[in-house]
Image (spheres, rainbow, N blue to C red):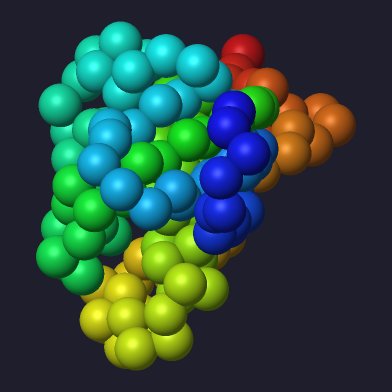
Length: 131
């Protein structure tokens, strides 16, 4: 990472946490030192991550560097999107209504429910046998 001035944002989704830095100028998105299309081969994950930049017409104006850990691929993509949106708002408050309307600033509270004792999963019980 370079010593240039940057704007940061932390994003979370499920168990994933993403630390996002926005540097001014041209450049793509780097995730854990790899280009976006290498780290996220699926197009829907890449479009999800780039959505806050498209919504605010900022694609191509920032170089985005991300450190992400925990969770799975979809959780990490959601965390990065949340972090990018937060960083864009930190840089300029005028973007907040646009990102809020699209739902990018809301942390998705859904997470895996814990397993309960006596059950096979969170809610699945053993099959009842009459005889």
